[in-house]
Length: 99
Image 1 (spheres, helix red, strand yellow):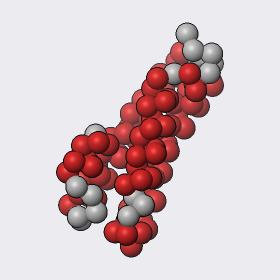
Image 2 (cartoon, helix red, strand yellow):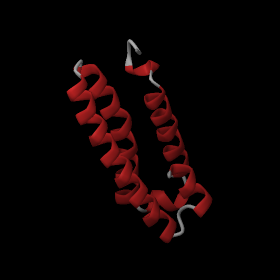
Image 3 (tube, rainbow, N blue to C red):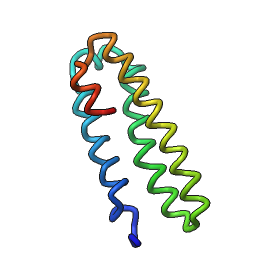
């Protein structure tokens, strides 16, 4: 078992997701829509943070709870990426990278 959240594959993957989201939201279109920009970035960081927090709580029940919270944030992020797609901020290929 991993000794720290940084050693887990799920946290490493979520870190890569945050990097991707920040790259995608760095475009001109997103800068004009501060509300969506903030929502998308916060949702991605929430996934990363909740995985870490759940791991650090030290109990399986707490970890499971926070993984469910992270899963909810992942759903929120996917929905927001549809908004970004519909507004022409990202391509379908970019949306699928986040999915």
